[in-house]
Amino acid sequence: MFFRTDMAVERRDLYKNANKLENEIDGIECEEEKKGDITITRVKITNENGEKALEKKQGSYITIDIKKINNITTEKEEEIIKTFSSELLAIIEKHIKRNEEILIVGLGNLYATPDSLGAKVVQNIEITRHIKIYLPNAIDKNTRSISAITPGVLGTTGIETVEIVKGIVDNIKPKLVIAIDSLCSKNIDRINKSIQISDTGIIPGGGVGNRQEELSVDTLNVPVIGVGIPTVLDAATIVIDTLKACEIDVSENEIVNKMKLNNFNFIVTPKEIDSLIENMSNIVSEGINMLI
Image 1: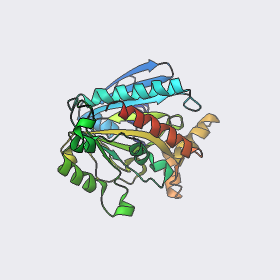
Image 2: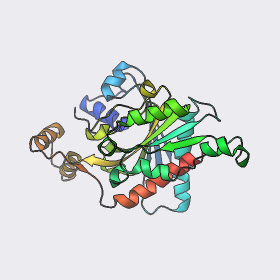
Image 3: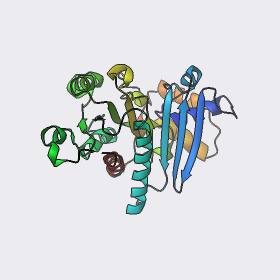
Image 4: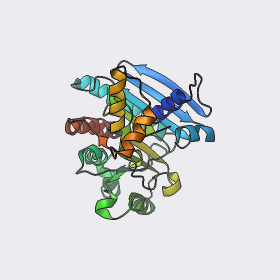
């Protein structure tokens, strides 16, 4: 089965459809909660069979799907921010205490708009670590210590992201890392309308075939929470969805293979990506700031 998606919920659905499963996959637990226009899907991979089926590590994957994200009201945006913040906090509290330090890592390339989510989020994070160290009386003692870094990409730094982040982690010793990145989806309706939170870390460039070494507890020796928003999708997805919309029976694997054979291996993003990135990066940064 062909997978070009970072979204665990999509991999689950694709696997079930491909194998014609009515019951849940062995090693997968899934629950769904609706809050108006917001749908929260919690997928948990519990054993090796689940890992193999979804090609994801054991752990929790929470997807927040947001309908009607364009031209939303201030009240609606606040509801989305609170929902994201609440789901993120629930995972954080499984790993660290209230006053323990967090390092925020904004992955991606600030100068490539679809890949700039992580860097944009970091620009709006309330950084507190230096204040707690040098001006402790100027800040509430219960404020969480937050530091942040945008390590850039291998092509401009010549350094693997994990090498940069590990050096920082080894020196400042945070108790947890939150890594933020743009993701790839296999569903047009999820582009810039979904947020995935996982407690298994993140693989920079994984969804678009440019995999680097993962950021996870295995490489950094501290828990790593991955936060991502799908900003791109494979061109084959558009072709397949268009044919299906025209009620043309298609073989997904056959189309994907033909496009690969003809070097039509493109990654696509919406034309209004600039404003979409601004909107979603604000939601993520404000949701994180609520936890400080």
